[in-house]
Length: 539
Image 1 (cartoon, rainbow, N blue to C red):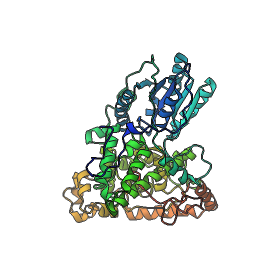
Image 2 (cartoon, helix red, strand yellow):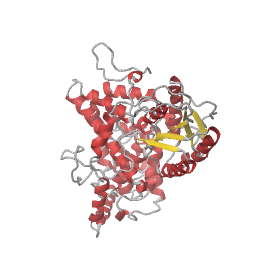
Image 3 (cartoon, rainbow, N blue to C red):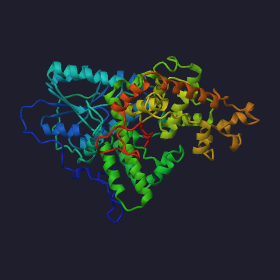
Image 4 (tube, helix red, strand yellow):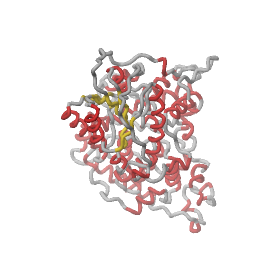
């Protein structure tokens, strides 16, 4: 895809930017030194060249640059990793290699433990500077980065971690956070000046998924799932803001319509083929167009979700234990530590006997994507109706989502499981959701062919059909109404416990958004709202 795109020069809707024309950067340029050692530019979840603050910083230092991506086998052995993530990353790396070549740099791939790779490069090439973006990742990457920081201090290596979104490292409090994020999003794109390549460093081949124990191939490749690479992300951004996104607000809740009406940018934002700032500024230009209120409303909703994306990622940045510990401690031990194996297996496979739940899960397994409302419903059914612990079910969902972003994922897993102590408890009725979101039954029938003979009126409750005994489809694992009632009683009982409100107030002060009466982020310090609204991150 060409670097200049969007405006057709004939009076059409033009708002996109030309990468080569943006020549401003975010840091003052220091004096160049002829004797400087090389700088490692460590790529992680930022697989692009455009609007890349860490690359711009490395180039402006003036020393030779070594663009490095480390394939870390231990990372891909984590329980939240899946072949679909790695397949997407491999495609992004192919594209990144081409992007870097266009500016005279060569991507170096190394396979191994990050500490060992970095130490070898320091020892063999005299590296004294490491630059990367600050990563808000899972617990494994957090521990890895702490170990790298210790190594850097011990070896006299300067490590700079720069922000690439509105997430703030070592944030003292949420008051004023939205204003700071807005300022970051409004800044000009970071564009690197020409840089010299650090020569003499060998690269390794990118291993296949099988070599990392992930299986032979990414499952979504067999079902037309999303492909990685910046060109793919740019094409999605353009089509969303020019054609597909007009019905975004209306269609995003439908698993069928949402697949086209949502931007589908989430995996590209998760792995950084696009920057959040690029998406936000392109959307801001689209919002200023004169295409009518429906378009303006859809784009405004999209930008709101981009902001909420940073908001939820900030929670994990501020409290890494969110991945494995209930945000409100009173909920620890509420559900069994070892989940019911039969129910968990049925839910994971889309075999619960609840048609809309199973259709959503099977769609997710096959494609790696699902719209937000259906993601919420799957987690809620697992946590309330099936009474499964959110850690086990959250890991399964993490593996299934191509767009898995730890900060968003674990915040939402807890939010939909009712363990934050500050959010409204939402127990979805899966039968009603099927009737509301799939009124014709097209989505359900597409993924549950074994229900082909069930009449439309009973499609979401096939157990009520007189021919149910002859179906090759399981009976429901729970009684929907009774299970919901029992779960509601248990969860609300915790809220009545001694000291619950005191601890909830602490969670609010640390993590809750500062919003006005319409649910919008306030731009000035105010007392926190009582509840974070449910927002979507499937885009």
